[in-house]
Image 1 (tube, rainbow, N blue to C red):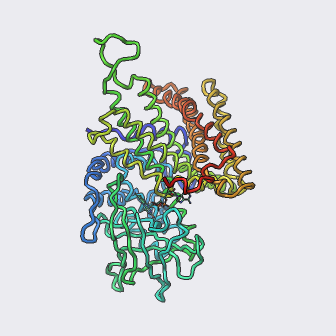
Image 2: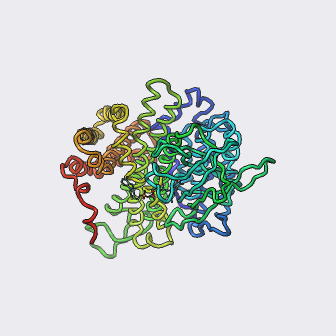
Image 3: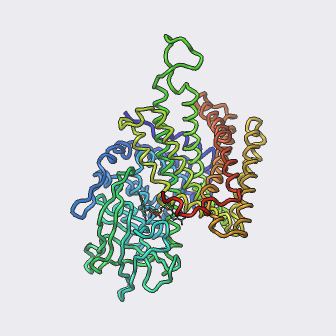
Length: 601
Ligand SMILES: Cc1cc2nc3c(=O)[nH]c(=O)nc-3n(C[C@H](O)[C@H](O)[C@H](O)COP(=O)(O)OP(=O)(O)OC[C@H]3O[C@@H](n4cnc5c(N)ncnc54)[C@H](O)[C@@H]3O)c2cc1C
């Protein structure tokens, strides 16, 4: 029997009621689309998620990729998934039509990705990575690179990767040592090692195209000396025949979760014959790569959300049927046991999961909405949407990743002992979820990004724009009697965020950077709880509007459930910022003062 892993109804509510995605079609860039077409795309995505991704969700975990005789063998369906993702236009969905894409808004493409992810995270990574890599070539590659690589990548024949991490350079990308030596023929000779490269090689495609960071010989130290290269697994010889490009997989890693997709160690140039093709200008590689990283950071947030959603719907179905105990106060042992969803504590756990997953999805869709608006706007508006997207990206990556794990844990808890066993999917989802705070920049890196860079960039303009966006929603909340008390709490929380931000900005002037950034992760947490409450307010406002249109009882439950979830988040989760604020404004930098030697024994 097929379990539910995502809600199309919720996706449509977010798309149309909260974000008014249909209005994008009034802009030239999206004018070939209509709401009806968006609906068809969503229905098709759900069909694919159910029929292609979901049936192999468990099998891909139980039979992970194998490394045999230098080749990486993956589940046979991966080839089909890549081909269908290509032929169905999913990989190139957001690409401009002149490059073979459908020019679909990011928010609609993101909604489709969410369904694939929720059905089977590992399987979804192959096409998603390819889209990101192809997009990087489309943005910064030469015409020759676009011509050679975009068609087979968008068709799902070639896998794309992002190859950044090295054994001695994980979080510290400034320290990568892979080198690129210019050759007279125009290409570069690449040598070095990369580790943990997702989809770094496999037999589900005809070629693998690495978007790889390397240092051109003689380049300055640090991030200013990093360049970006296209490094194919196979390149064409003079007769246009594919030949190996001296990129060898030396091992695949055995992971706790997300087991359906291989992560590989790559060795380049052992035979001195690995060719890389420069993307854009030398030494601007990290700047270019940030496009793919930002896209991937939203993708990671979406990945975490999809996994947590699948766990939530599994818990929901289980708690509706599992009977245990009786309501407090019911003393008659002969009375029937109740489904556990009737217990307040189980409802609390479900509310936690729903508020995390639907809140996180809303925030990510908000980011995609900004990306779409940036694309169709000009002048100051374009800058506004760009800045908001930049500011919220670390939040949209981290909140779903960190809280997603807690949410899956609460799902597992709903199953009692059965959740801990392999009979139900939640055990796998729990393992799958754990990767997200690690890859695409750990939570610590995201914390330093928002506090050390994003909040201050352009003299705090992005941050000010964020406050304005929240205040706009708060103004609307005042017109609803039942929302306004919760709006007041959010307004107070916004004041707390502003007070803490001001304090930290003063600290940045007065103290050294280490003290300023020591608790950046706590700041990101505080910021996230405020941002999520805002997103829940946006949902509550949209639900209130829908409730005025005389919906059916089923729809009424859905919309009223949204309003209740907003109240839940503001009442149960948002108050946690007070403890965070206390710590963030304290004067004793305990972790900085603590010598590493204190941990010796
Ligand atoms: C399943 C999986 C898939 C991956 N896919 C890819 C991929 O496709 N492409 C790719 O290039 N990489 C990939 N990675 C690598 C991933 O991005 C790195 O693991 C990650 O960036 C962290 O690097 P690291 O493992 O070297 O940890 P480290 O950088 O050694 O970090 C260890 C710990 O120290 C903390 N830390 C490190 N530096 C600082 C600092 N300056 N301040 C505060 N704390 C710090 C970190 O937050 C972390 O908690 C993948 C990894 C995994 C596990």
